[in-house]
Picture 1 (cartoon, rainbow, N blue to C red):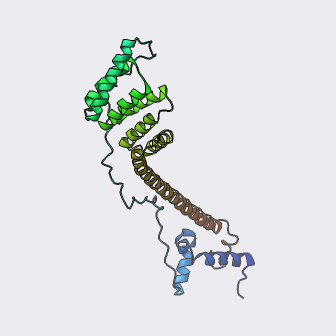
Picture 2 (cartoon, rainbow, N blue to C red):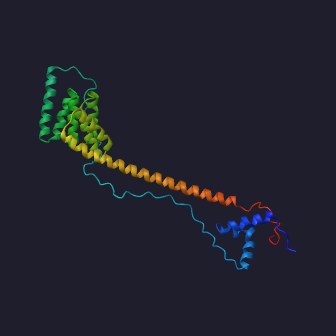
Picture 3 (cartoon, one colour):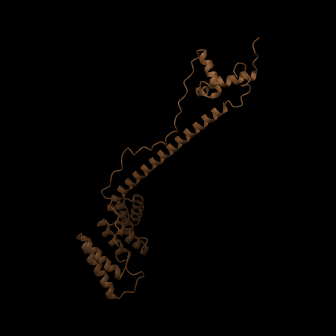
Length: 267
């Protein structure tokens, strides 16, 4: 008479057999080695155990297809000591002092026309010592731009705008200084504000160049952010997949399967 097998035991065996195609490595566990040996003795062809895959590597961000082209107009930062910024408060001037300030400005303006910017700086500074004003600071800043000293130019423009917040020349000159440093967004903002106050065609040409460069930089930043986000999502998807596989394996475990020990011929 054949030994009876309970429905519980049959169900347990079904679960084991159902797991083998997707998880053949379970046959190599100590609890089921006897079953593997039994199947092999009957000439069964068993699926190869799956190779354990290492954790997914952190996705590498693609380098820009086109490296950013160096701009020959961008210069290193200048760190020269600041020139005299004049008295903190506007003094009451004599007529003679006013004439002296005007004379220094006149000499400086002529020096600029002759491209003698060192002489122009010297005389604008002498005028500032006597009578600091937004126009003179803006003119001295313009000399600094010509001499490729953008930080000094920005400092003078800041002072000019403190004295006159509506100085179009100070905004435009500061924008050109930022352009020399490769500060494209700041340059675009200052040039735009200066053009609103006092438009000129020469500045418009610089403004177009800066606008294109700022747009290019923003596009590169956006591309990098998109690549980072794609990498983050890919990693999250891989981790979710791994958790799902682990959960499925845990759900089909063998601990506590009813009747295994009492299965006739299998204990």
